[in-house]
Image: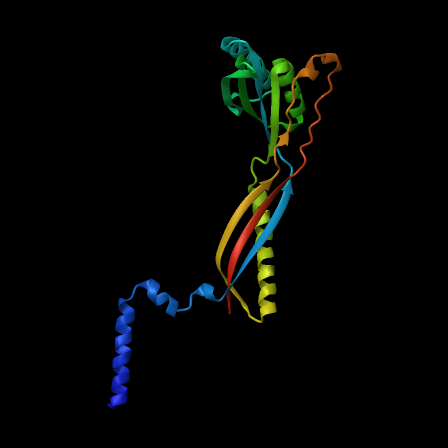
Amino acid sequence: MSRLNFLCLGFGSLLAIILTGCEPQIISPLLPSPESRSIHVTGSGSVTGEPDIATLYLGVSVEKESVEAAREAAASAMTAVIDALKTNDIAENDIQTENFSIYPQYDYTEEGRVLRGYNANNTVNATVRDLESLSDIIDDAIGAGGDIVVVNSIQFMIEDPTPLQAQARVLAVKDAETKAQTLAEASGVSLGKPITITETTRTLGPPIAYAESAEFAADDGARSSTPIQTGELTVTINITIVYEIE
């Protein structure tokens, strides 16, 4: 064996020993990772559907001179509101208390802070599964609770969005693939297989602001039904895919 061949063999053996003993993070820069030749794209797919349930956020708010008077007024009105909800076929387990609070109210004068009374708040959320009855439910709850009732908002939802999500997911993947193919062709490379796929989901349809007192309910004979429009909700799937470049 020539001296040159011997030196090359010895150097190769030494290099193999060094690489074998190195940590993976030291070796990895020497080897190209799959993502070093890749295309990152984000695809989006959206499908609309009609809501089939709603959550109604309502409660009572009253101010009285004493804690007990405020509590009693709020309790009486809230009991009437809950009874009205149940009369309209809202199941008991679909009614949930969100907040109960009593706190002092002050007036600020030149002489300083003066206690004016106490404010009691009691709020619930109620799941409405028959949207055609939503207008009557609101009107009856307001009529039962009187002038201290406050309706905060309505949130429309789709109880089972799975079928819409499946449709949106297919559209998102196709959108991502189209973008990746366009980038590959424009760059003069061939698009390979997906390396990673990640997904995010969102449903568009914010709560409807509906702060309202019950003053209009005083005259039952002249009362108009509260108009409610359910509209549509949009389910959106965003897909991020990393493709290999061949």
